[in-house]
Image (tube, rainbow, N blue to C red):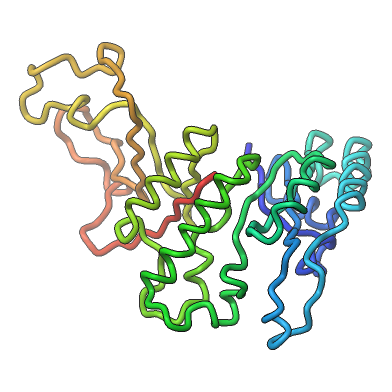
Length: 289
């Protein structure tokens, strides 16, 4: 069963197009088992934004949001949202918390006075600017801009500690003026290693997703542990007879050729299960969870 864990409602400054109830119905109709509303909460908004748009509060009414979630959950339990929303469907209480040195005190106070099912920790503002409007990039090349953002993300993540998901580490690249449009591991391996190490050691995880169906597997074995190649007598290759390694191997694929053969000792798959020789493209995202 799948849950959508990053949503904004009418309580977010950017969520006026929906409501808790409308989004819950839409999620249930798509077959989800639940939804979490993580409305935006940035206690500090840089003044530079008023050069581009009116500044509005980016702190939502937490008590009102949670009361509305309780109300709609009550309707669901009574079957009050219609047949498309099963009674076991659940709405969870969350927040997307904007991090930065200038709001540490307010952040701690908020978290000490409210309970959440899920907190997404994000960095929307950096060096007293909003990257969306561009000034942050002035005087920086892509590596300086992206690297600095990752450094702040890591610093704030370590400071907060109490969160469930580290949100969009690629935010800084979305509006960047560089030909380099992505924040890639190979460009910042040291920083990403520190980020992933912290997340994993502190009970967080990684999410792998694609914009189309994909195949994946996670094993505590290398491919060479399970398959000796042409010589099948080198060692016992059944997983039950192997010693698991102390790391996991994650494999992602758009799809693979099927095994639907007329026998299991050499015949190629039936035509409908083959992948013709051609160029294929596959896009996926890895993000902290």
